[in-house]
Amino acid sequence: MNIKRIDHIVLTVANLPRAIRFYREVFDMPIIKDKSTGEENCVRCGHQLIEFQLANTDRDLRPAKPVIGSADICIIAGDSMDQIINHLISYYIPILKGPLKRVGSEGEMTSIYINDYDNNLLEISSYK
Image (tube, rainbow, N blue to C red):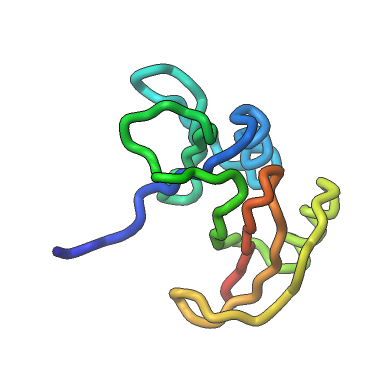
């Protein structure tokens, strides 16, 4: 098997419109509509998608125990860390930790950590 990349991830959230609004407004991620239902349940993050589901969603395929706020993901920004921090401050989003030096899939990066409205941990990083 030759795995090329991750296509999408699914976050379990308490309020679908609120989650979509957070990722759209704070990160400027475009909203994607489900082609079969027309429902807005997804945002584009670079070449990947972040989908959202409610914990009590009755779907055929879902995790055994979907829990709100259990995700820990890293997103890469194209801005400087100072610009990222100032942007988050302008949205009144508290920075939990950082900036810190980390090693990611492409080498050394600088990261800060925040929570989204569902308490998913988001690491926002930039490479040199």
